[in-house]
Structure formats: structure tokens, C-alpha cells
Image 1 (cartoon, rainbow, N blue to C red):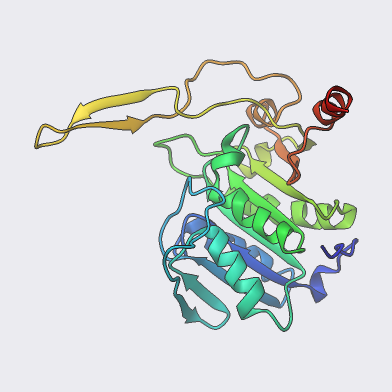
Image 2: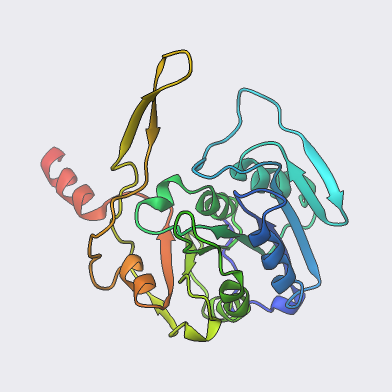
Length: 263
């Protein structure tokens, strides 16, 4: 895996943008708008349709098709992972991107969300292919209007700060913006560890018009107080949360204990 070069000169970078909300998502358009002010060489490869909750799924049993939307903007009828893989290993194969940005997602990717998120998965795929990546999400509660100006105002500054500091080649940066109506109400930026918030606490059971039972997975239960220092607590406090997510899932303390036990 190639080691990314930091600090990165964004004005000379080749940036690939993807998401899981689809090629027509407002968050994608905002991210494009912001990034085109930082860099001239910007490419887009996003899913044709929304792929929320797709996780790091890859299309192996059916073909995927790529469509040129306009200029350097492309759509793929596969998953977010397919999009990044196709862009890096085919579309931009001869001149690979130096940075991948995924988002801006309509909805937070906090706690255990990162295991299900197509937004985070797109960034993770970039890391696996040797390209540094940042996932960006706006913490919009279900049923509420998205306050996109908050994310738009702070996205460029976050990207600049992160590429100036840099991060390991096996790590992606997971950024979440608090959902506040006035961008000026954002209190700042904090690094935070991954919190705990498991989706699917509620399962709704009903019957369709033919009387056949079905189940609908619900959101997480509210009212829980997140642990201090987590991404969840950071967002609730009005700060932008930045969490480094490693792709190597080996638990080293457990591995050490296992080696002692097994010899």
C-alpha cells in the first residue's frame, strides 16, 4: 500500500468525490462546490441511486455500469464501494487521485454507524486502494430539514486542517458536523473516539395488503447519554467531530493473550 504524502498541496491535488446518497444528492453537490474552490482537478463517481446502509458491499454476482453525467462527473449503478473501485482502478487508472472525499451524507455516521455506512465504506475502499480518504456527514435527525449551510461553511477548513496534519495509510478520517441552523453556532472541532449507538433497537412488525407479515428495522432509541469524549457526545455538544478509523480490525491485546495461550 502506497504511503500518502503529507502535508498535501490541495491546489495540485486530484480529488475524487463519492457518496452513498446518490449522484443527485444535495450533500454531494455542496461538497463538489466547496472542493472546486480548493482544487481544479475534481472528479465525481457516485451511485445512480441512494445506497444508505449498504456498508462495504461489493457487486460480484452482477455487472455494474458506468454513465458519464457531464464533464468529470460519472454515475455507477453499483454500491459506493463499486464507485470508488471503478474510479480508481479504471477511470483514473493512469493518473490516480491523491485524495478521496465521501459525502456529504444526509445523516450522521457515528458510533456503530460506521459499520453499516456506505459513506464510510467509500472512504474505506479508497484506503484499501492506497489513497487517503475523508468521510463527511451532517448529523440530521430523522424527519428534520437538513441545514446544509453548516456543513458547507466548515468543510473546506476541515479538509485543509486534516491534509496539513496527515494520517497513517491504513486510517480514514470520519468527520461529522452538528446539525445547527446557524453555521456560526458551531463551537469548534474536536477529535473523538468512536462511541456506542447500535441501530435496530426497534423492530416494527405489521402485515402487507395481502396479509403477509413483514418487519421494519427502526432507528436507535433516544434518551441515552453518550460517554464523554466520544463522537456522539462531541456532536451533541455542538462541535464538529473527527474520528480516525483504522481498517485493520485485529485486536492486539487479544492477539497477545491468544499467542500466550496457544504457544
